[in-house]
Image 1 (cartoon, rainbow, N blue to C red):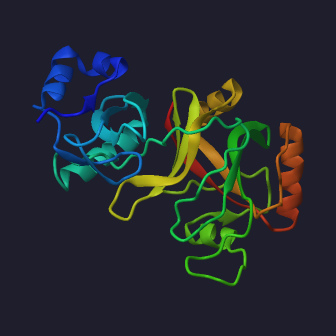
Image 2 (cartoon, helix red, strand yellow):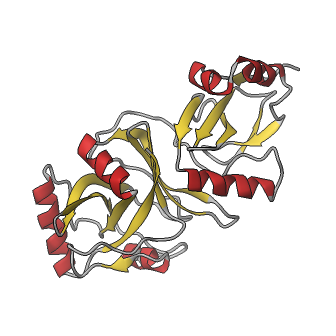
Amino acid sequence: MPRMLDVSDEVRSEIGDDEADRLLGGDRAPDSYECTSCRTPGDTHAEPTSTVLFVGDETAVLAFAHARCVPSQVVPVAEEQLAGAVRSISQTQPAAAPNLTVPAPAAPVGPADSPTQPTVPGQAAILGITCGLVLHGKVGHASLVVEPTGPVGRPGSTSGEDEFLDLLQDAGFQRVSDLDETPDQLSGWSVLVAMGKLHAILQPAAAGGSTGWWQAHQPLQVTDAWRMAASQLSEVTMYAVPAGMVGRQPREDLLRQALERAVALGQVVAASLPLAGT
């Protein structure tokens, strides 16, 4: 039975015509796979499947996804993250997909705010993401401000109490007392930027590697200044605040003022997250 596999032109140009033809002919494609976007099983014989090539500085990993989730594409990622995925694969089975996530496209959203579901089980809040440069002293840091639309409780909680910041502190985020200080880097977390767009915030996966904590419905365009700052420092500062604390701010000076007010109230946690991608 022929495989229902799509190899885009950009993937073909990276892997070469011979390898692409072998994939389409079934020599190199698996019968079944775990979708690199939604992480559920897929079958190359039964449903349209996309090839997704993760490319680092020295390493490339070919993964598979439901065509309904993402199109066939090339996704640049940090070499360190990709090497971790390769190690994870070698410890399981050669045909396993890398533990990297490509977010599924959906309706277009604005660059400053992207509603999405957090991937913490049992949570129903919608997260808003605001991108901006925040000065730490005299150095502008590429930053993300994460703010839910309502209270976020622990899985199974019915009290309605907002525990969003407590949950993040449990994951290693620290309370902010001075906005000019750069927070410590949080191991295992990262921010995925590919082809100049913000795709996801990744967290450590229980089985090793990383998985999506937040994913954009559609990759978000970031400014050149934001991308350059992230690339120069190889990290992004993530701030998190409770619902209604900062809101949507149209300018970076207003964003900073809102963050300073939240810091004064003790309502901000943060961490520096390594940059994955370019």
